[in-house]
Structures are given as structure tokens and as C-alpha cells.
Amino acid sequence: MVKHQPLQQVYEKQLCLSFLTGIYGCRWKRYQRSHDDSSKWECAWFIILCSTFSLLLFWAYFWLEAHNDYNQFNWLLYNRSGEWKDGTVPILATTAVGFSYITFLMILALCHISLGQQLNLYWIHKVGVLAALITTVSGVVSIDDVWGDEWDIILISLQSTGPFLHIGALAAVTALGWLVAEHVVRAERTKFHMIVLLVYLSVLLALYMAPLAISSPCIMDKNSLKSRPDVIGRRGAPMLAPENTLMSFNKALQQGVSSLEADVTVSLDGVPFLMRDHTLKRTTDIAKVFPDRQHEDASLFNWTEIRSLNAGQWFLESDPFWTVGSLSGRDRNRIRNLTVCSLVEMLRLAARANRSALLFLRRPPPEHPHYKTWIMDTLWAVQRSGISQKRVTWTPDTDRGRVRGLQQTSLEKLSVEELRHRGISSLTLRYSQASKKDIQDFLANNMSVTVYPVNEPWLYSVLWCSGVSSVSSDTPQVLRKVPYPIWLMSPDKYCLVWITSDLVSIAIVIGIFIFQKWRMSGMQNYNPEQIMLSAVARRPSRDVNIMKEKLIFSEVSNGVTSTDEHLYPENGYDIGQYK
Image 1 (spheres, rainbow, N blue to C red):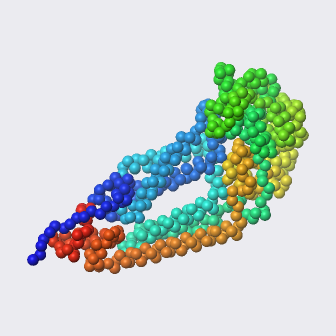
Image 2 (image 1 turned 90 degrees about the horizontal axis):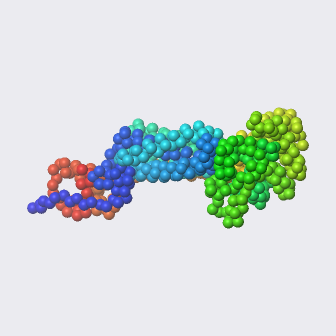
Image 3 (image 1 turned 30 degrees about the vertical axis):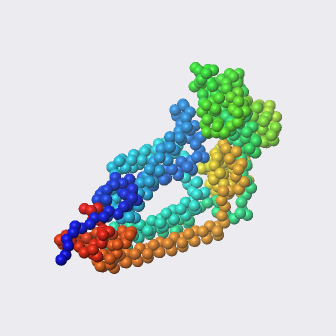
């Protein structure tokens, strides 16, 4: 006589799966999960998630490389708002939070796909993804309006990071082959699966050929590397002391700079002094001494009034480079008592140190009494300082014929013929204007090239390999620690790395597809008796579990309500989770 008993339902703990589906789609219960195909709506949300991740990856990379120009960005914001603040802090904070959040969701989504779980992004996450996407798009549009020239840093940085990003991207796409193969090798292939396979292979082929488009000055023979570029202290060493002050230039000389760069304007009584801004508001305490005149042009003050202002306290209060905390107490006390520096003082310091000077001059406004004589006032200060005229480099294009004794440099990229016609022997260009080919052409015609601003070791290394003569930097203390390019690789060695990485990737991808095909064919060869006998396995595979689920449901639907112990063992399969 057959003894009837109810079908047992034993729940197997799946904590990891519960965590994945719970965090991603708020599906914490077993009966809420499903192996069915994801809906088109959820697939669309997955595409939006991938797009947001890609955009945030681009945005984060941009700000990582733009670190070279953070001070310039803050200065642009100051000129627009009139208030000095570090605008990069909120941008970096929101970018870090948003990128971490979206990356976490991407990992959860890929885990869902790998485990065959249905995608069902929770509505709160959908709001978060849209917020991240809209915020990032708004940021891109705003930066394009305020700081559009900075996009060039991306292409320039790829000269340094391109070979390494290529290997990283190749590894990531190769790893994605596991998911692609798992879906493509199924027996029930669809047109969609074939499209996915075609797209995947196209991306993989593009990555295999990507090095053909990668061009880096650092891919060269070591014997072709030129001597280390000289470093010019741009406004001194503005991270160690307030810009354009005597202490800042002294700090720069201590870091071994070859020249000092300064911004020069002329006071109301004809004294050339050093000031970057058009007003004295940011870098002095004029708001306390002359509160009614803080928005006036700096050149409309006489030298006595300018000299009475404190030029160091602002640096301690605003900490523009986040470096005040690393300064000694002695340096802080010296900074508190700094005053505005005159051109004569800076040139005398350069002469004593046997260094050169690069002068960026700003002409005073038309109502200024020295509007027409500002060049003669500057030349008179050069003569008074006692520095050799050959050590002073002149940048303005105005009245070059009157300053023949000084070194001439152009801030505009002109042809070699035009430079020679004007009597100019060097160029001072922004790094985005100086390609390797341009630099080589100018050097071949005995034209030295100085590039600014160069604050990061990677950019210094790229320009070093390009052959520049010198760089102008806000961070001479950082570049001093770069005795050799960060990386240098011969063309043959790079070609070997390229071919090897491609071959390894091809072998791994083929191996993945073969393994998945073998694995799936093995699952298709199971018969019901084998499935029931293997049900006692401690941790059955996902594919076998799905087959067991279908078998049990078919038995139940056929009216089976009793079982022998050998057919449905004590540790029977749970069917409650699939209702």
C-alpha cells in the first residue's frame, strides 16, 4: 500500500542572490525573483544605466586630468563672480558620489545577467540614475560654456594614458565575453542574440586595432630623448607662498628653477609692480584699507598706497592650493607680513641668483597718466635692477623695436618666417597649442619653445619626450621630483606588448565560447532520471535547478500528490519560490 504524504518544500539559503536582487530591485523574497527574460522597459533602463556610467566615466576622467589647471578654473570663476572660492570641491565631491553609485548599480546589473536573473531596477534607483545623468549633462554643458578650451586636455592626456587605457579596456571587454557567450550559445538563439554578438565582436576588433590610432611622444628610443626641460617659476612658487611676492620667488629659486615669470603692471606714479589681477581685491587687504576703492583697477593706485597693503594674509585665509597646512610656523609668520612686490625687487633677486626673468606686461587703462609711457617705465625699471638685458624676456608685441636689447618671445604661434621677420627667437605657448610636430619644426629652425602651464608630472613627461626647451609651472617643487619621464618605451617593445595582449585576449575569448558551448550542451543532455538522482547534490548548478523546477511543475500539473522516498528525497527541491 502506498503511503500518501504532502510534497516537501525545503528552502535553500541564497544570501548572495538575495543581496543582489534586493539592492538592485528590492526583491528580497524568493518568490519575487524570476529567471524569465527582462522586459523591454527594463532593458531600456539598463541601456540608460550604461549610458550614464559611460558619461560619468568620461566626466571623471576629464576632472582627473584637468587637475593641471584647477587654479585657472578657480580664477575664471573669480573673474565671473568676484568672489574667490574653490569651485572644484563640489564638482569633485558630486562626481565621486555619482560615479561610485552608478558603478555599483552597473556591477549589480551585470551580476543579474550573469546569474540569469530578471532585471528589475527599483524606482528609487531609476530616479537616482536620471538625476546622475541630468546632473552630468548639465555639468558638461556648463564647462563647455565657461571653460571650453580645457577639453583639449583629454586628447593630450591620452598621449600619456592611451597605451594603458587600451590594455584596461581590452581586459574589460574580454571579461564581458563570458556574459555574451552565455547568452549567444543557447539553443534558442534569436536575432537579438546575434546582434549582440556582432556588436561585441566589432568592439573587440576595434580594440585590437586601436594602437594604430594611439600616438605618444613617449614611444621612442631612449637615445633620442633630449635633455630635461628647464622649469620656470610661474609667479614664483604660488603653492608655497603668495603669488608674485618676493617670498614666492625665493621659494621657486630654492626649487632650482632656471627663470622667474611675473605679471607686471604700472602704478599711478609710474612704478612697475607685480599683480596678476586687474584689481587688488583678491590678493591684498584692500577691503580693509580702502573699502571704497576695492573694485578700482590696480594701476590706478600710487606706489605708496599699494605698498601699504598686506599681500599675504589672503593666502593663509583662502588657502587656494590646500597647502597652508604643510607650511612651517616660520613661513606662515613671514607670509602674514608680505607686501606687494615691485618689478625692480624681483629682477634684483633674479640677478643675484644668476637667473632669467620672463615678463608678462599689462598695459594700464587709457585714463592712466602713463598710458603712453608704460614701456619706457618698464625698461627703466629693468635698467635700475642691474640685471643683464639678455636675461630678460619680453612678451608684448607692442613696440618691439624699442626693446631690441631684451630677449623676444611670442605668445602667438606664428610661422618661422614671420618670427624671424619680427626678430623673435622663441615662443611661449599654452600646452594645447604645442604639438610634437610643431615643437620639432621650431627646434629645427633654432626657435626655442616654452610651454605653460605645466603642473603635473605626466604632462611634463609628455612635453619632455616632445623636446620642449622649458616649461612654466606653478609647481616647481613637484616637477623637481621628476628626473626622468614617467614612462618611456621603444616602438618595438610597444608593438610586442600590443600583439601579445591581442593574442591573449583572442585566446581567452575563444576559450570562453568553447567552454560555454560545452557547458550548455552538457545541460541539454540531462534526462529526467539523471535530474532526479542528482537532486541530492548539496549545491546544484543554476541550469540543473531550472530543469528540476520545470520537472516538478510538470509532475504537479499532472496530479502527482504522493511520492516515494527515492523519487523525492528528504532534501527535496523547493517549489515555493517559483509560484
